[in-house]
Image (cartoon, rainbow, N blue to C red):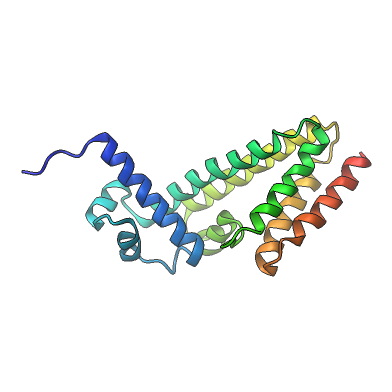
Length: 188
């Protein structure tokens, strides 16, 4: 009789599964990746994977949710190092520029998932909307702390830079969006 699986083993296996799925989904797209590929990459049997997530859609939502916490956490850590409130807003674009320049950058994981599944999966659509609201709220808080009402245009600049950098393969949109945000901040 096999030994029972510990909570720690469950945690480690779940993290390995999410790591493998996130990498594959981000690199190749959700629909292009089959669960057999996730199984191979994670090293877990399909039966174990389906104990964690009853359907691929559940795995996609979990990947997006975990990525949201990490991605927005990294952004906040970067921005919060800047003491000046206006400088914090501009630091958003500096961080985006660094992200765009990373090897393997494929744009916004949530926009990518929305493009693939947003019209057919209420759960994925809800997770995408949750991330976009949270990201908007993050930026809006920094913009308001800078004493300007320009939250909406700054959010649009950030979102537009992400999409443009993904399509063009060039990190320059972060620099251009930063310049536009600086103008908005200088002319409240």
